[in-house]
Length: 261
Image 1 (cartoon, rainbow, N blue to C red):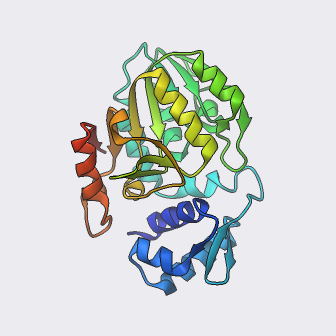
Image 2 (image 1 turned 120 degrees about the horizontal axis):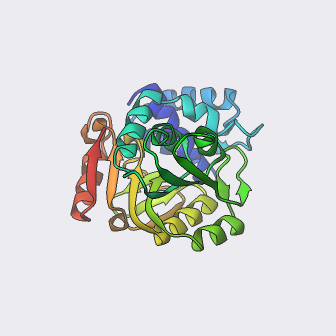
């Protein structure tokens, strides 16, 4: 697993628990404890985690960009391919619910050329990408902007989604696990995704391969509720992603279409 991939998973695992030990991270990532300590030092220097004796805890963001911005830089080329692959599946004329996340910003950039579309954006970053684009009718879901992520969450967001119907929900995800299904690191984000799943005719989930085998804090739904999963080809490589092939097999057993970008 490359350094950027490892930092991404490490950050997500720390965010998903009250406290994560160095030994636990080393076992999950298949690296030495020395490597984990070095990675935690890097994340702490960026203000994303706080080192404690024997492990780390999630740090409160210093500013609105401290959670989203560093992750946006990781695997940017991979996320660009994923974004293009997802957008190519969206038919012109569709009503689209676009989830929050670093990968779905790349989806938004490619959707701009797929109009006419009506897009309901669940993040301020995606909304900024789609604002004033020809052929795109942009609707920004109401709600609270979650600190560090700028994802829109809370009762107002849920109420807005419950009043709408979508041809397609493009769902980002924090973790996809063979036994535990789709999961997220934030209860608020998980609730929004559940509402989106309920209101969409079809769902395309998108995530890079680092999310395979990850069980995040809050379960969103079983694997079979998603129609299509778009990920990168390294998901099938046991050397870089030991849990990848097993997770992919579970997805196929649940009759989820898998596309590699």
